Image (tube, rainbow, N blue to C red; front, side, top):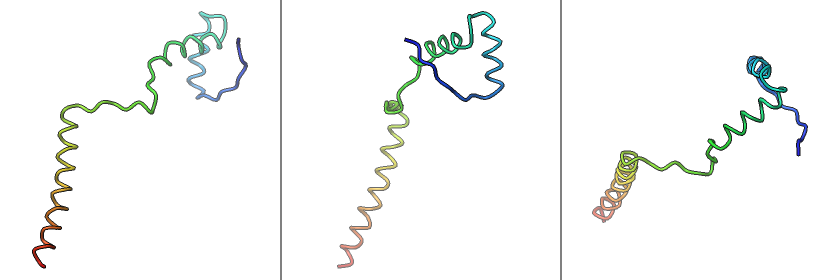
Length: 81
């Protein structure tokens, strides 16, 4: 079932669609083909990217540094008692 809709796009992009549409029936066909090709390649925003090993190590080291400082502050406070 086809649904009529309105979109807003940049003028230069629409010119490119119009140029491509010469080889198709109309603009809508160009949009449909482009979206069918492109949409499966998009990842949902909720899907998180897996960290690289280097990123994991960096994150662990940053967290360890923060915790180390916190622990040292606590120890210094206890020593003053």
